Each structure stands twice: as C-alpha cells, then as structure tokens.
Length: 296
Image 1: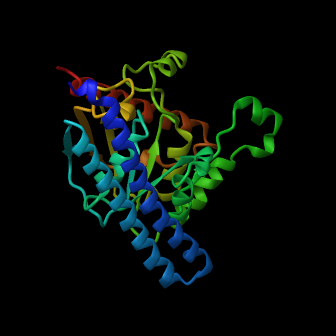
Image 2: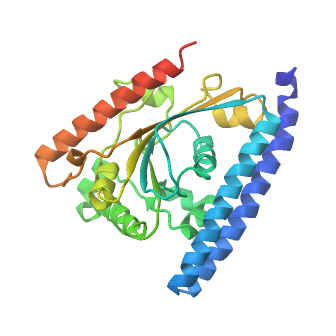
C-alpha cells in the first residue's frame, strides 16, 4: 500500500522540505549579509548565535517531517558522554545528502553547532551554498593529480582553506565535521577504488591531518559517527522523500584524540605513514562496527 502511495507522498513531502530549507536559509543568509556589513565582534557573535539556532531549527523540523511521512525508527547508539561546551572533530561515513540533515539535528542540545567541510561546487546550490557561506563553513576545492602536475602552484590551497577556517573556530565551542571518504559511498565507487573495507570507501587523510595539526590541542574528543539506512541503502534520500524509509541508525563512538595523530603530515614522511596507519586502523574498526550494526 505504501509503495502505491509513494508518488503522492513524494509530491507532498518534497515541497515541504524545500520550504523548510528555504525559510531558514533565507534567515541565515540575511544575518550573514548583516555580519558582513557590520564587522563589530559583539554583533558578529550575536548574529552567529542566532544563525546556529536557525540552522538547528531547520534540522529539527526537517526530521519531524521525515518522521511524519515515513514509518521510520531512528536509533541512536552513543558510546560516551557529550557536551555543548566542548570542541569536537567529527568524522563520519557519507551515504546521502540526508546525512547532513541528520547530523544537524543530532547536534541540537548534544554538541556545539556543526561546521561542514563542503565541496566548492555546493556554493551554487540554492539556499545551501550561501547559507553555508554565511555560517563560515569552508568550501574545499579538490584538484586531480594531473591538474596539479600542470598547475603546481595550486598545490596545498585546499589545506590553506582548512587552516583559515579552523582559526575562526578557536574562539567558541565548535564541531568540525569531515566526511573522510571525500564523497558519497556507492557500490560503483567502492569497486572502482578497490576498497579493502566492506561498507566504506578508503579514507582521505590530508584534511583531517591538517585539522588536527591546527586545532588538535583544542579538540576535547574525536567523534566517530556511522550513519546507516539498513533497509534503504541504494537511494536513502529518494526513499525518505517517498515515505519508504523504515530505519535510521546513528552510531556515535566518543574517542580521545591521540597525541600521535598530531604532526606535519605534508613534510614529515615518517609521521605521514604513522598517521595513515592510525586512520586505516580507525576505519577498519568502524567497518567492523557497521557490519555488526547491520546484522539481522
């Protein structure tokens, strides 16, 4: 019966999600423009607080709509304690744009407002791009190896973006979110990259290494989060908009930030090797944890 109703649910649900996004994004963008023309620290701080509130309202209402239109059970598994007064580096797998909505909603009253590292192309996405800009989220531009060989002066520019962004986050509790795989997981990408993990793509170490080098002493904990849609793995976003989502698992593992994970990743070959080993071991444990969560 629900499959028959899926097109109708999609036609009703999708505009409501877009309206919710547009409303709160318009408020955030307006405050961002005010912040730009009124560069007074006290005013900027006040506006940022209100923008973070608006972002979390967006996430909360979006999840309420998801629950309204889907027979979904959201399962939270949190191993460790959380606080809005701490600084966190959050690393997560990436399956869908839905991940972002869920992480925004998860942050509410649990951890400080999240800052996502976004692909530069997303700045042109309606509402999302300018909203992320207003919230001081970094836009990363990845260059291929062949492009860097042709234009070597571009090497390291994405890391410099990371450094400048992290400097802004030192003044108040922040959650820095990094989708370490660098892209959304699909079976096609999994096969193309010959991933050694069953449920994950190989992790990209550069961004997280530089974030730790810049803010490592400030981070209270590392949050290893796994987002899973056990019954809707192929197309989670479409399933959600069509009322077909049945289970969402948000698994949170609160870890300490190891001292050995901080160093000069780009200049120290020995540290780079140790860091990649640490990250791969973390990813192996994450893959095993996901496998257990997906067991019937």
